[in-house]
Length: 231
Image (cartoon, rainbow, N blue to C red; front, side, top):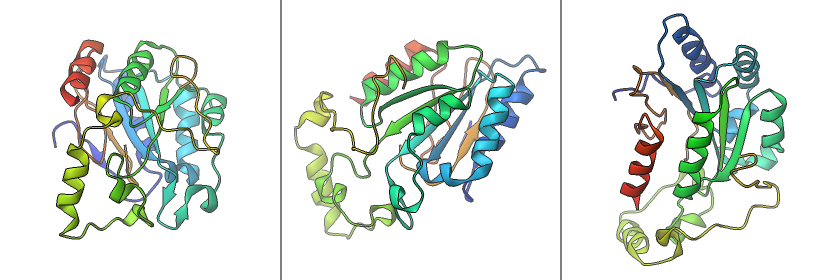
């Protein structure tokens, strides 16, 4: 899709590529931004942290990483495979502007993206605490949700559950933080994929990088228009 430069299959490649792209934009005088969506499982990879060091060393404030912390990997809960907490502290220690929010809260996401975009002098990372299948109880509680299969008869059940009125759709629900994932308010320190992707586009038309493929507006107002459209 337009704006998506890489859809990484092997874990740990996305941030390294995104860092190289962000660095290369500088001598060209290109004001584009690079976004990299990666999973909490990719924090197990050493190449991710090598790239994090490089990006901070070069002060790549045109680079934003988005970490989907859904606490699940192919082999089981992230906490049991390889404990990565405290994630926020680690990114900050590597020299990044780090924010952590409820990744299922669109308002919180928009505010965090606005804050990261305004920050200069260092790359930014948005750590998103999410739940796979959020809004569909049938799927939220499913074991091995990382490899979720939806049976034919379950599709309509899922649609009905999504359409049902509830606090999630009203935008007021914030799930209680997982005890192993302390959450800071978005103003002080800060969706699901096992792949990393990165993108760079012309100035005023950056693209979000996501295995789910979505385009990021170029201004804070654009982000808010997108947010309003999602309601």
